[in-house]
Amino acid sequence: MNTKIIYLVGYMGAGKTTVGERLANLLGETVYDTDKMIIEKEGCSIQDIFSRYGEEHFRHLETEILKETSMLKGVITTGGGMVLKEENRELMKSSGTVIFLECNPMVIFSRIKGDAERPLLQNKNEIEFSSLYEKRKPYYEKSAHIIIDTSNSSIDEVVSEIE
Ligand code: SKM
Image (cartoon, rainbow, N blue to C red):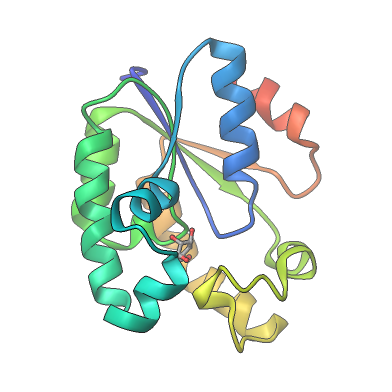
């Protein structure tokens, strides 16, 4: 397995960013977050990109950023929809180790509901949010070398399991 890069994939709110930062710290590596990189490069929020140019344009930017990060070394935390394109799944799998942070969508929903910076969360109730997760789950699973269930674990437990 290629461990030059550790990719964290999973649904929005699963804890990828926090786990990624702690993990990178522990390993003495740099952490890169694809959502943050897109925001910096485009100079506007993800919410703005979605509303001005649409989701498809965002997905294109996401793939471009992934290509850049695949040349780096470190921990890469990915947007919740990164696994949707086969091209992205293949690139991650061939350039690093992909870890899926599995989670219970009901638990996540209660934590992140109302977050205006998550366009795909807007106007969704708990059932719709969970059903989007169920639709995506096969893609997270397909993309991953390792699956870690985070539903009943603390951030520290997840980080030490990965370590
Ligand atoms: O990448 C962002 C964006 O809001 C889309 C997304 C998704 O499709 O689940 C998750 C976020 O990380």
